[in-house]
Length: 145
Image (cartoon, rainbow, N blue to C red; front, side, top):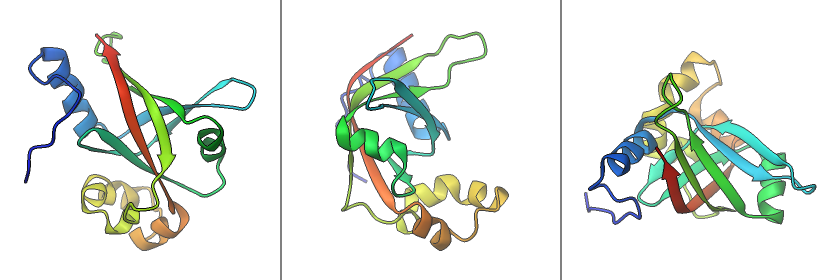
């Protein structure tokens, strides 16, 4: 596997921590902006691919309409028990028509196959037909502590 360049500085303790969370956390909070300017956070499943996050959505969801109107988004990873370990990324999101369907995306299925079964969401193919819109988030800034 080729090394992927990333904007995260993995030579720092915070950079290593952020990369680990992005690779392993099951949920990220995606915040889009509604037409009236109200932030709209949603918990989503995602995978981290190099310098981007990939998530899937049911068509016509508010988050997709928000992204189409205003691609600026934030990703927030859960903090530790006492509120430290905060990781926040800001950037842009767009529908990714070239992404594989989630059931054909090996890293995504490796991360979520067990949860799909545990939550009785049907077969991966059924879930892929429902969550058929891939969204790629390209972070520009990272902050936290």
